[in-house]
Length: 419
Image (tube, rainbow, N blue to C red):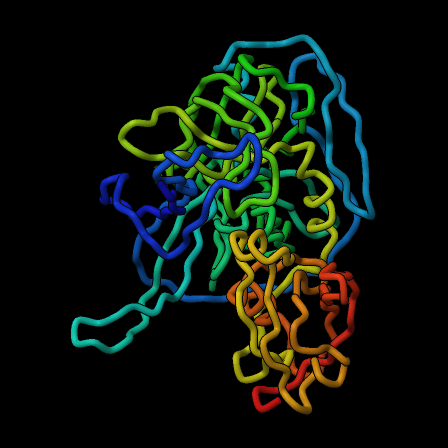
C-alpha cells in the first residue's frame, strides 16, 4: 500500500491526510510497503502577520560550546564556519540533567507564508498560514547566530521567526537549503538578540551518529504541536532506514516524534546531538516509529549551508528568470527512467538566460548556487532571492548517447519575465 507525506493542522485528528505528495519505498532498509502514512513533524495553522526580511553578510567565526559534564570537545571546520563535536566521555543517563544542558540550544521556528486556496465560490484567494517547527543552534559568526532545521520547516516562508528558551522571538533569514536532504540553515542577526537571551542560549554539541548502536538511549527535544519545547525518551530502534523524499539514511527511534518536532534534536545519553528529527510513521497499526537525519551524514551539507550568503527575497517585479519550462523528476520517475532527480527541461525560451548559456532541452537541473532542487517549486523558491541581471550557477545533468548523465556547472545570467 502506498504511503503519503502528510502535514497537520492544529485541531485536526492525526490521521487526516493530504495527498499532495506521494512516494514509494525504494531501497534496502526503507519503509516497508504496508506503511500507510509517513508524516513530517511540522504543524500548521492559519493567522495574519506582516512580512519583512533583513540582510546579513556571512562571516567566519564560531563561539563557545554547550556544557556536558566532563566531556572533552574538538572543533572541526570545512570552509569558514565550524561545527563543534564532542569526543567520547562519561555517559550521563540522567534525562533531567541532559535536558537542562541541551534545551538552551533548541529553538522553535514559526513560518509565516501566503497560501492560495480554493474559495467557496470556485475562485482562488490568498490567506496567510502559520506553521511551527524546531531548530538547533549550531554556531555563530561575527554577525549571526546559525540554526539548523529541516528544509520543509522553512520552505515557502514569507517571514521566519525563531523563539529561544526564554520565549524571546527574533526574525530570521534563510542561509541555505538542501531540498534533497531536507536540511536548511537559518540566520539570526546577533544585534537583534537581547543580552539576557544570549546569556541563556547555547551552541549544541554534536555527537558521532556513526557510533550509535541499536538499543541505546535516545532523547528527542522539539516544539511538539507548537506548544514550545518538550522532551520525549526512547531508544535507537534501527539505523540506515530510508523514506521517500529524503536523500539520506535515517535513524529510527521510538522516542515520540510529533508534529512540530521537525528540525529538533535527537540526543544520545551524553546529551550530544546525533540526529535532526524529521518524520514519523502514522497509521492506526503503527506506534513509535520516528526518523531523524544522522548528524555525521549531514555535517558536510550543514557546513556548506552555514557558509552561504544569507538570503533576502527580491521584489516580485525585479526577480530573475532562467528562461526554461520544466517538469519535476520525482523519485519514482528517477528510478523508472534512470534519470537524476530534479527539474527536467522540457523547453528553453529563445533569447533567455538558459539559451544564451547553451543549456538544451532534455537536461535536468539539480542545483542552483549549490542548493539542491528536486522540483520546479524548489527551483522557483531559490530564484526568488535573485534579481534579473544577476548571474547564478546551475548544476545541470546532461544525457549522453549511452543513457548516462554527465554533471556540469553552467553560469546563467537571469532575464526578466519576458525572457
